[in-house]
Amino acid sequence: MHALKVTRAEDFPEWYQAVVREADLAEPSPTRGSMIIKPWGMGIWERIQGELDRRIKETGHDNYYFPLLIPLSFFAKEAEHVEGFAKEMAVVTHHRLKQIDGELKPDPDAELTEPLIIRPTSETIIGDAFSRWIVSYRDLPLKLNQWANVMRWEMRTRMFLRTAEFLWQEGHTAHVDEADAMDETMLALEIYRSFAEDFLALPVIAGEKPENERFPGAVRTYSIEAMMQDGKALQAGTSHYLGTHFAEAQNIRYQDRDGGKALAHTTSWGVSTRMIGGVIMTHGDDDGLRTPPAIAPRQVVIVPMLRGKPEDADLKAYCAALAAELNKESVFGSAVRAFVDMKDAKPADKRWDWVRRGAPLICEIGPRDAANGQVTFINRNALREGEKIKSHTLTRDEFVAQAAGLLETNQAELFAEAKTRLEGAIRSDLVTFADLERYYGTDENDAEFKGWARVHWSRPTGAALDAVGDRLKVLKLTIRNAPLAQPASFGVCIFTGAPAVEEILIARSY
Image (cartoon, rainbow, N blue to C red; front, side, top):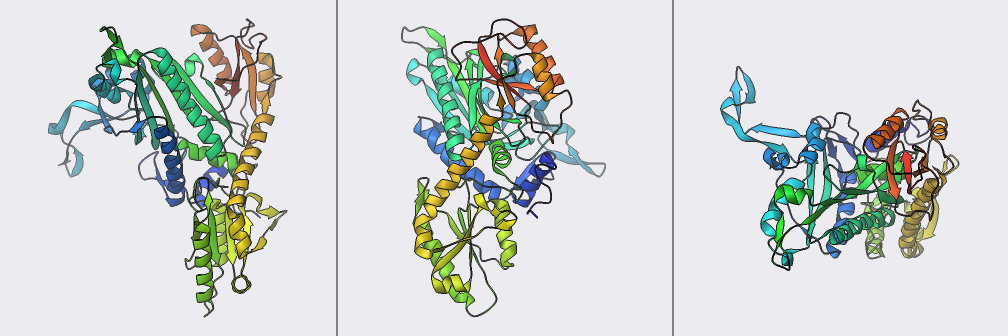
């Protein structure tokens, strides 16, 4: 028996929902399509936010905050951008409510002169600020970042992966020319790649999106793509070179070194709480989440085996002292996060609560452990030996000395496991479209694992690219990206038969 009532093999989508629920990460909100993020989920996001914020600031960016509501006219200036988000925009039209016929309704006399959009992204309002702040080439580059919530009116939602409201980070920068802006675009992509792999234990492939998958209004879009345990791809972060499109729409001009006027080149890039969904689907097992120690809100959880007896006081003191010792140790650049679970519940129930949440090390300390100066613990990465829960016992001093190393090993093991899965599930032997059809089939079966395909690509554009998209859609496939690491030579395009210029990744995706 496992801690969850559904396994990955039985029903992967339902298993995912069970992990979110049983690991106490989040729950559905009364607001359609939104979620309430609970302490374990929010603790993970805070760790993601703290580390990523540090990396962003280290590369010369400052944090700002811009309004949630954006005038409709700002979007109307950039036709391609507004078209890309038009179906997802939530619109505020009134500023007051009124009792009308016994019901609370928008007051007809309180209609806004101009509708306001709840931000789906902030390029337009930040571009307006850039147009005031940037006067000379001396003001460039301007590199800012925002931590915020956004609203995109998604019709089909799934917690963390796709919700109407979600939390994210969005970077926005302006530069003197394309070369400097492209350096920034690739810098952001590398921040995301290294962060995902080093901190989330999430192996990814970084590359450029095809023309039809670009961010609305972008000249180039790059992504990091992660493979989930069901073989599907998750776009875990994006970085966009916007050229001068937004600068022209928002009049972001500066005086260059020769005294003339030039348009700034801009970028934007972001990751969101979707990353938590990626962690769940990459590292979870049939007992719940396995939280990478670097982002675990509690890295070592100590569960005293309380029995309602006088010796419980000594046991509590022993556990508190153990936690204090552990908290003096350092791992991943900060103090070990040890926690004593003193709540009034059965020890076995508390153990399984922490198993489902994926606390990396769970200590179960009884009176005999305290009397003998030892620690009995389970390692969440290697929870079972067959169906039996596998426990370990060390002296207290040994456990304190080894805890940081155990956490580092857990982190490395999760990454290695996911990396092996990723590399072993990319097919490079599908050389014709018929090969794709045979491998993926025309009916998607979520219970059957299908990996990714890496194929040769001639980079068609326009109508030819649309035709490729239509053919892939039949197989429920999309082009994920063209990996940055490319071979020295290419064969022929799997779709057009023309000489290929790069290789691309194709997959089913979230």
